Amino acid sequence: MSGSSAIGACDTVWTGARLLPMTDAAQPLSVIENAVIAAQGGRVVYAGPGVDAPDLQASRTIECAGRLVTPGLVDCHTHLVYGGNRAGEFEARLAGAHYEDIARAGGGIVSTMRATRAASEADLVAASAPRLAELIADGVTTVEIKSGYGLELAAEQRMLRAARALGDQMHVSVATTFLGAHALPPEFTGRADDYVDQVIDVMLPALAVEGLVDAVDAFCEGIGFSPAQVERVFAAAQARGLRVKLHAEQLSNLHGAALAARYGALSADHLEHLDAAGIAAMAASGTVATLLPGAYYFTRETQLPPVAQLRAAGVPIALATDCNPGTSPMTSLLLAMNMGATLFRLTVAECLAAVTVNAARALGRKDIGAVAPGFWADLAVWDVTAPAELVYRIGARPLHARYWRGQ
Image (tube, rainbow, N blue to C red; front, side, top):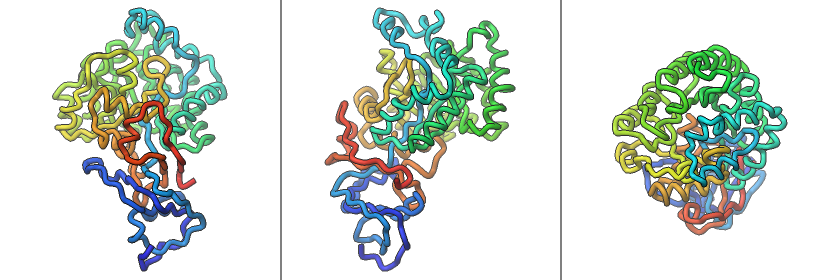
């Protein structure tokens, strides 16, 4: 380090890193050799070439020994907290049953609802912690966790409280999303508008007052909720100053992505049936396209999301596990990257941006997803020789070390 100025005392300095800062998703991947990263109070104060680093007085120095260092990964779409499992439905689909048929027969989301309603907050934490540990072992430092399997106030509260507790216990940043408009509970059969009233007038106010809601989501689909019903939910969220997201165009095209874009949605997710108008709306609003290859693979979908058109329109693309018990029981963000490349034909650079800077954008975060001054010192140190290995390998766990807020 040859700089003449001093940043001052630092908690930690990482030296000898091959740094992939991911500060600009639009630029080709560029590794900074022999890089230095310095953190104070859990935030990065310097990240760049060692020869340009200022004088740093660190209480702890970590030698990376030429290992690749990236931002901690961000899983921006999960349903990680739930009760029970749906292996039986998986077996039924293998025998030819369709997801819509299973849902209409009382399976699907409603099946998980029953198990989740029967679980205590402690039960939910205990059941979900191993799933979160798997993500952490893949270098994840931030995870979004949705509610939506309670479908009543008390159970939704337990889900979101469990999500918050997991973040506190496992040293990972958790973004909580209220997904009350996920499915119609049996007690509201034939009364979808009445249930939406319950979501808007009872659940959302109570959860927001308790500080359990970072964003609001909905499932806009024939087996979910109509665009008109979703718009009511979005208007209620907007009135409370909450950002919105949307499950859109997964099974059909109800023009949910364009609706989400009108409300400045952080992201529209799935998008297999997205059309040109939806793409244009997302491009204009800056809404992120979060693609979920695990669900595409697991449900044996054949309609590909329009990646080339999203790319051409400049819509930011994120990838996520969509970890859930019915359609994507996946707990590896590295595997999601591999699937994004092999199934959706994303490039290595697009995959890495999709789980760092673009995934952070899908959560409305400007302090994670990159390694740069002012950002949280969320880092993943990898035993790989090139960034492409993080996308190329299947089933590997190349993580050498993970740092969350410098620790």
